[in-house]
Image (tube, rainbow, N blue to C red):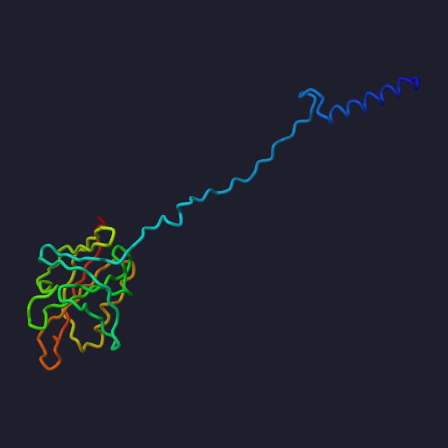
Length: 206
C-alpha cells in the first residue's frame, strides 16, 4: 500500500504539470498541437471595377472624306410637332440627344441641312452622293474616332406615317443614321417633299 506522503507528492506533481501547461512552461513537444482553422478567402474586387466600362461622349464632329463632308456637331432635340430639330447654322450637323452616343449600342442620329435659304450647299449637300461602303467618322471631345460604314441609302416621304421608324434602334447593333432633305422643293412649304436617310454600322473605334 502506498504511503500518504507518496500520494501527496503525486498530487503536487500533477498540479505543477497543469500549471506549467497552462502557463506555457512546458516544452513545445509536450504541448497539445492546435490545428489551424482555414478562414474563407474573400473574393478580391478591383477598386477600378466601377470605372472599367468605357466612357462614351457625344460626337463633336462628322466627316466623310469620300464625299468631302466635314462639319461640327451641336445637340438637337425634338420639336413641338414631334419632328427632329435642325441646327441653326447651315454648316453644322445636329446630334439627337435621346439617341445613342458614338460607339454605343443603339442608333446614333445626326441630321444637317442640304442647302441654305438661297439654295447654296450646306453641311450635308454631298450626302446625296454617298454610297454603300463609304466610311463616316465621328469624333468626340476626347479626340476619339468612331468609324461607321454606310450600308444603305433611301428617301422617305415627309408625309409617310412610318417616317419616324428610321429613328428606332436595331437590337444588338451600333448604327448611325444620317438625315437631310431630298426629293423636290415645295415652295409653299419651304421644304423638300422627302428626306434622304443614310444608314451605317460601326466597324471600328480608333
